[in-house]
Length: 223
Image (tube, rainbow, N blue to C red; front, side, top):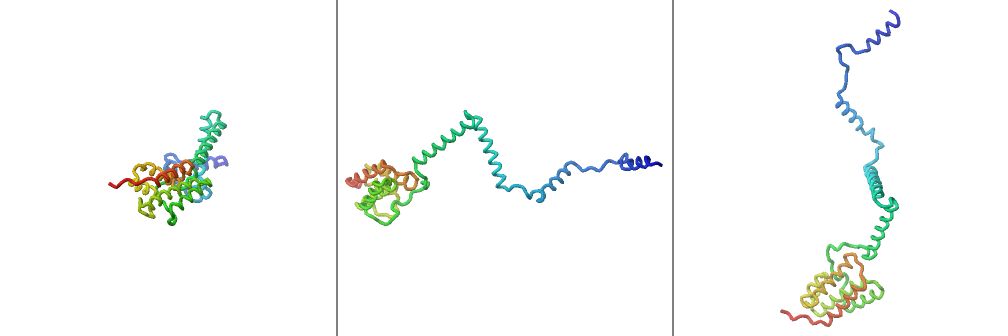
């Protein structure tokens, strides 16, 4: 037998014999084996962390959002920039008008946060704050002067833990004609003290006028 015959015989031996199917791996089993192999930690050593993936998704979403917004805004990107600038200016104007939020008015605190002082002392402090343009402090001190004056006239029982709303409600019993003004005064005190709203000259003027009016008002006759 020559060399060519040996080659043909060896090649024939490598071919599958007739009637014997080739060895194959089922598709599902192969996929599962590949997934198990790829799930090994060695293949994920350099994957980005959870925070990095979240940031990537955020930037992708933000980029898509800006692209869509620029396409829907007249003027494209320049128009979107103008709209964003207007929004920033509007927020800044509201911040300046309402003052810096310091605390959410979820509940009223006590009216007097320091030791006992006379109504005259509170009025003096209020006028000093008003003269210096510190309207928030002026409103607070004037409300304290009003309540302390009612306590000094025995229209209210002295109570250290009393809130502005409680003082207004109790004073309205002796001074029913001024119940609405007393409630508004307590609300102004709570807004500047706990609601983050800045005081203003108008609020202080109303409180001072009410304080002066009540000092000359006789209590209603008890029923």
